Amino acid sequence: MLIDKIRSGERLSFGQQLKLTAQLSWPAMMAQLSSMMMQYIDAAMVGHLGADPSAAVGLVSTSLWLFWGICSAVTMGFSVQVAHSIGASDHARGRRILRQSIIACFLFSLVVAGVGAAIAWPLPHWLGGKESICPDASIYFLVFVLALPLFTMNYLGGGMLRCSGNMKVPGGLNVLMCVLDVIFNFFLIFPTRAIDLGGLHMTLPGAGLGVLGAALGTAAAEIITAGLMMYFLCWRKSSALCLKSSESEQLSGKGGRTSRASLPVGWRMEKEVLRKALKVSAPMTLEHVVICGAQIAVTVIVAPLGVMAIAANAFAVTAESLCYMPGYGISEAATTLVGQSYGAKRQDLAKRFGYITTGLGMLTMTIMGVVMYIFAADVMALMSPVKDIIDLGAGALRIEAFAEPMFAASIVAYGVMIGVGDTVLPAVMNFSSIWLVRVPLAAWLAPTMGLMGVWLAMCIELCFRGAIFLWRLISGAWLKKGL
Image (cartoon, rainbow, N blue to C red; front, side):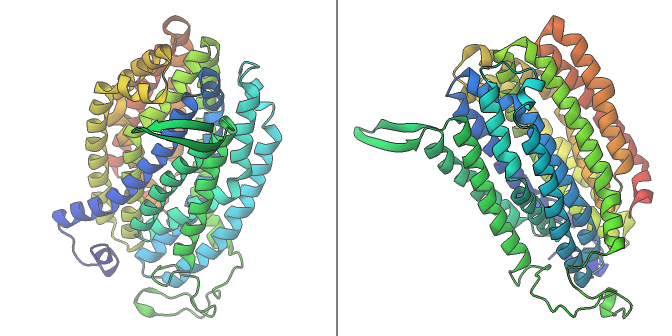
């Protein structure tokens, strides 16, 4: 395999680098698109229940991203170390890190889930939601935060597989998760109903749970996927990190050398592993908290604009993910390629992969932005039959289409920097941009321009963020700040 050439020190031509980038990016993009489709399916199905259920889901969606993102960021501190270990052909150390990550991430997610459950009922009121949508919003939020420990295992399993160079299994399982989501939602959201299919009259059973059904269906799909993800990672012998390996393994150096001073493989925590995990994850977690705090602040700015604006904003955010999810897929490939190159002490190759993946991300998201601009109204119509919601959402999407190339630059360049373990300054760049540019602009423009002003502020901020990330990528300073 081409990726093995990184670890063996063999030369990779530009064509091979490009091919390897495409090989890893494609399944990662499919995984991200399937994840986006889950959000799209939930939004579309709930959208057909009416404006209030749609607004209930939209009101707490940014808060859920906050909790999901915190747990996901914690897993990255361990995944990056595994990428470096595999790049250095040190699989024994990678397995030790995996064992420790399972314990640390699960315990951390239990604490986060407890905090989420404690604030589930007052949260919609804090966000300025109307009384008619608060109960549904609270239930939707509560179901997801209670399932966070198992969701975290899904994030960890997928991240570890990708950092080991296995993009196909996470991609395939995410597609399966999307299919399961459709099936579960279909029976849980809607009541028992009669349909006419080509002259054939059928009665379809349904639980009629509405917003609660959407939460339960998606949670069930993700939990099943988490179990399969961990199985392929930890127990399949084809996995580079299979935990069936002998517990008496010692830390192996490159070329098969063994260090007798190293700790034995096991589940005991190592200070050095935790220190490095903290160095990577802490800035990412803080950054995510601050960014999601800003997104919640934007939700508070949108809330006084009315139920239609809340629903249109939530649906437009979901629809926009069709554009940027491929960028996140390429970003994951960038983290793997740059991480393994850095672990193999091939910094020039790491830098070249940084340029290639960022360029590919910008090209892909530019094309997606053009598609979104043309079909904005059609996409919104699939998510809601309400004309006001369609018109507002389509206008927002057309504004955002202009930001997609630079948004891609910020997404993929960030993944490149994570690959070497450089997260402090990129995190500062991310949350400074959103708090110092997007939030003040949105607060200033919303009273006069409504929802369009909020999305114009977002467009301007994303262009600014992309520019500063491109500047840092080209400077090469990130290579000096790695683990």
